Image (tube, rainbow, N blue to C red; front, side, top):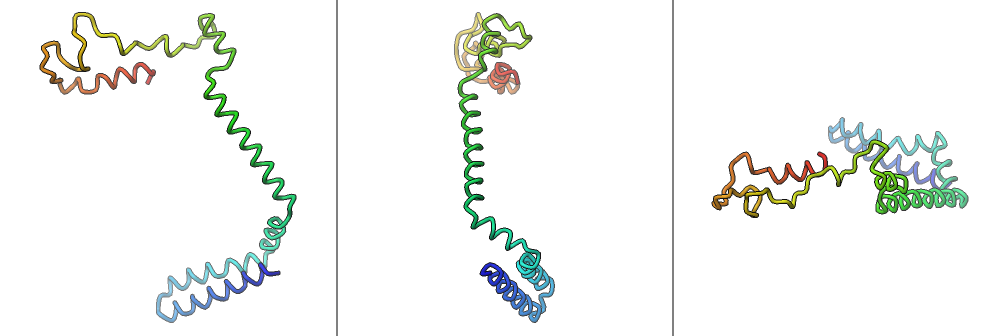
Length: 153
């Protein structure tokens, strides 16, 4: 009963504001305000407000929402724990056997970035053996390419 009264008052106030706006020759804005003002009274007349009020004040509905929230929380936490734990037991066993299932182990297939090429001194990536420290324009992204290759991208 109170919700219907509030919605009716909001619609009446909105239509009043729309009338004042139309009086000021802003007809497009007035039509838009009138459209918004008719929504609450339309919801009252269709019974939506009564239905929502029935749901909002029913304790069994709130218990249902709490149970749905608890189920969602369990799904999220188990998924996060599963991701942190790593591969499943079957996948670890297959990796120990040598990957009989056709999967490629990413760590075994990726080249190591820490190995320095033979014949060159260890320095910054892209640094020439001459020691000038300058890189050619094509060598700027060589370390990034190596990282991407390591991760299979």
